[in-house]
Length: 319
Image (cartoon, rainbow, N blue to C red; front, side):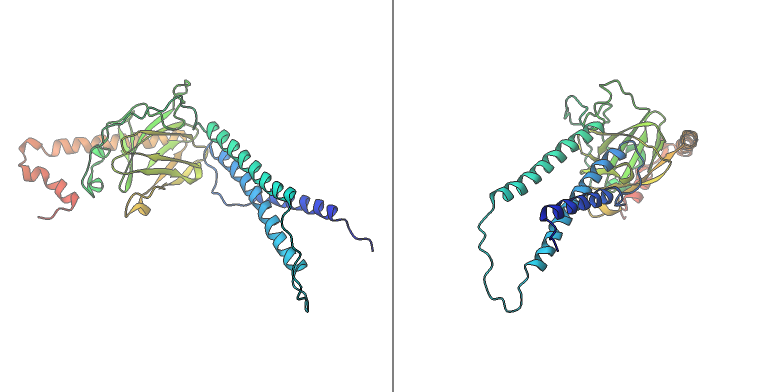
């Protein structure tokens, strides 16, 4: 029986490995659902890496298994193995291929980040802002009205989508996001609404102005494939367009203290009509609350201890 040439077996194996890797790269189900315009860009890059990693894994592990069988020690064979000192063409091959792969992925990743808006800014101005230093634990007790502790900056130019304004792209919705140990506060400057979760309309170009009152936090929405640090004293920006109505988790991915794992919130993507309804309800509710507080108590009529009592109670300071 005529033996099949090794070159033909190698070709067939290469084709099968390529087809299998491509299938795995498109059907791995390792990522959550896509919910933003930026998500397909990240997923495309991730799929390419999974395809390449699958091919390399099959080749390396397959070669190991084949060699374990073909070159196993036979019974009664006590001779030494063949003295092989090196193979220059083979060494060049397995050095060049990974080099080409790494360079290709590097160029592809820069292209993806640029298309997401991460390289739009013409220059990063690291102008610091004033940060109010708080005693440990006081961030928990801060009221929503003064929770940020930061002098807001209207034009942060560090982060994804930071250069959109310079290119004439105005956001449909701007939200000021403040990270603190261990919560996210969302302020809508155009309407005066402050909330503990992010609400946006589907299809709208949303700009988040991120800041931190204490340590570095990181704002991450897995379904959006977007993550941006919130840095004390340096405003950053995150810009996105949500594409699917739903509720998605907001996670802090920068270790920020003992309760870092509980620093979670959510982003609720509404239809435009539902968003306007939510915004109107919260604007009215907040105005009524402020009015009730103003009417109920006149601070000028309170003693120092009476005025400070609610804050003392919130901060957990005993008598």
